[in-house]
Image 1 (cartoon, helix red, strand yellow):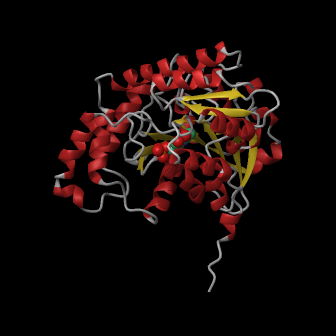
Image 2 (cartoon, rainbow, N blue to C red):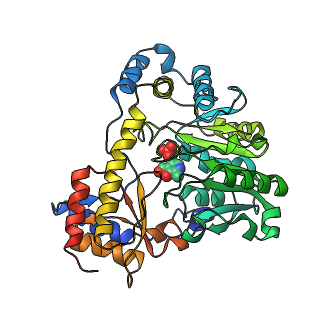
Length: 387
Ligand SMILES: Cc1ncc(COP(=O)(O)O)c(C=O)c1O
């Protein structure tokens, strides 16, 4: 019997980069000195104080059994304290906080909790792909909000067709943004909350990069008075604490959305390994300045890349947040042609912008996930090319 893929999988957009991926693997296998600015995964290790917390917690037999689906009370209390300290927002640890096996899991499962087949979800483009795939898996219909430089890569809420807005169940937003590195001010969240209330839409605000800011502190949508009526927010320890492999994040906000997501999860997973939850407590309680030191390291890398490329006459703006640099590719190239040329001529991997959605065409994303010296080397290699 031939096993056929489910229709929902066939509805996912095609994977665009098979050819570039093949060339990247071939270059690495051939022993070429590839500088990989393609992946959004911190190159530095998880700090020792978190590993030590894990070590100790792993020896505790209470952590060897199934964890509570709703997360440990200690972690939920710590998240509430962290949120209050960071954003001035009070959360009830029992009903307004839900630990996740990484924020991707919550982002992708949320539509199963609140979207019925045929319902519209408003999805930004370019975007982190699970907003789109989560919507499709739940039978929802993504309606895209294009993010362009003219509006600071914020969606123009007034431009959304009012019929689509009225029919929508969920809207995803993500600031600091992957891939554009844009940030949103509190005024944007105020307009967003008003829009969501007017049209009865749940806002899913993805704050995976909330701590990776270089200038002003970033905001939470929950800072807007009354936001809990319509907002669920997703957070991650992955990028903040170099813990991408550990899989721990959390959802906070609207009680009904948290309860519905918890119900989906209790039918799909059995909680987060207790020792990882204890390590997450250690991370969120840290006062050593680890996170800000880490951000200063990314700032130096950012400046090395942006100043280097601008010095070559490229049009590259300095991102105010995230470890991504999003820039228009040189004239006469598509995103994919540009990234292929970078790989073939300079052994540098960057991500073509169109992989994040159509409006990403004409852009490329470079991740600051290699040491400053390697970034300087990348700029030197690019200097020798002609675009
Ligand atoms: C915008 C955004 N949100 C969420 C995530 C998921 O992070 P995690 O599942 O590791 O918490 C990522 C990861 O790259 C991301 O870029």
